[in-house]
Image (cartoon, rainbow, N blue to C red):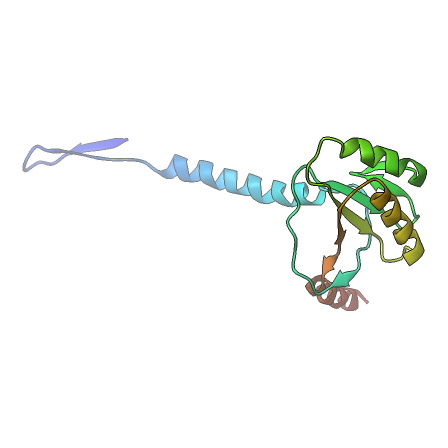
Length: 152
């Protein structure tokens, strides 16, 4: 804090040095800019190529159960592998105390329709009343194809 005395009236004026405050804010900004994309990417560990459709984005609760079917037809519950035979029992246990029985299903677009339907049947047998299909927005596909054509 800098202070100086006015010669004519003897009153005292003071100024706050904001340079350290700006430095700290810029460092915090850089930290958040670097870590935010990393947090978004680490949301799901199982990589699937989701089908692209024109649909409104849905909101997912933090405690949502996400079932993933990858290209190799392996099943995952929130990134933990599970067999199709064990899926019904596991889901029944997970949803025993929940009032809202809602699940999100992510399936790679290369997986056959039959495999996805078998998974959906196991989910229904477990008593899940709401099933949401996760897809990529259509806008991403146009930007992906543009970036792919630039690389070629």
